[in-house]
Image: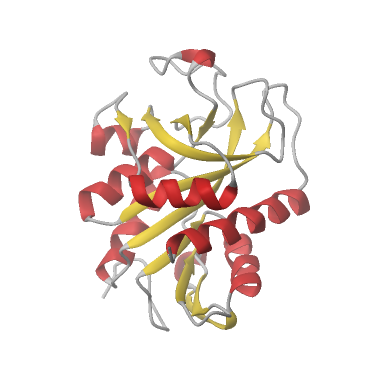
Amino acid sequence: MSDHLRPTAPIFERALLPGDPGRAMALAQELLEAPRMSNHARGLWGYSGSTPEGEELTIQSTGVGGPSIAVVLAELAEHGVRRAVRIGTCRAVDEALQPGDLIIAGAAIARDGTGGALAGQGARVEPDPALTAALADEAGIAPTTVASTDLYYGPEEVPGAGGRATVAATDLASAAALAAGRRIGVAMASGLVVARGADGATLSDSEVESRSLDLGRAAAAALFR
């Protein structure tokens, strides 16, 4: 039995991993026919079901930050998950990015505790190349570099990550997710919604959900390519 998740429905080989339980429910309602709740322990809502094309998919929320996503991913792997896409949010560092833009992580700089522990502090963590290429193709977006930190409301600059010139955005969990996936044998990619611009402009909750659904549709298609 998992120490944290308590599955009450089958966990499938392919999974979407939003952080927010509410977005997990919205994605399940959008992408699955007759979704079944597969986890509600610790408020980490998860759902499993079939897409309209008959493909089996799990959608599991991961909570906030690297430690939580690393634990959830490890336990999902115990139940058979082998390919997964993080569906998250981020803060723009590149001033050309606007709230609502989508980012595909071509690499994540580990400036966070969990990513650093798994891959080395400041390491450049690569996603699964085939899954990331499929996600970028489905979303119509070229991959870019992000940096993961533990301080969402911390300094705008990311020490050791190349600063504004090479890092498009910062988030809390991409490096941990990609590093954990490599360690436990789960092919991982990470897609992010820009929820806060470099100038501080933000999306509304409804706008974040709408763009997360757009990203989720692309991610689901990528998982089954």
